[in-house]
Length: 148
Image (cartoon, rainbow, N blue to C red):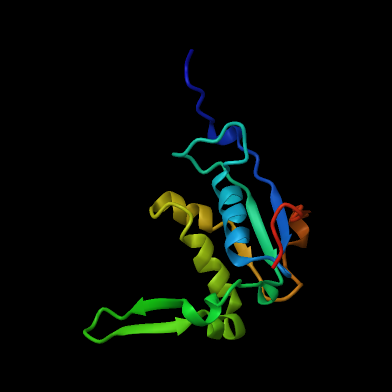
């Protein structure tokens, strides 16, 4: 029996709308990464981009459990000596929640051109409005994702 490999023309991408209000960051990130990679499909192939488009709204109302907001940091480095900068998750939740959600999901996709192509299908918005109404995104059932 031969192994089936999906063709690019056979892949039909859907649009999912996820309301992140009250959802835990890590649990949301794993579900979204799985949708972006296409692991929910029967013809999933790890070397191909078979995933769907995902729109996340209300990223500013996401929940971080325990004391992670104060203990965890997002790091960046300028490349120069002494150029390490850190920002706490607590500051990111108030200033730029979109960056926190995006970086959390980015860590769960491959670190190559395939992962970058999958991340291009992710759209995160801090408020409840989004400009993707013409694509008719289907609301995703978040009852399986534990709320904080």
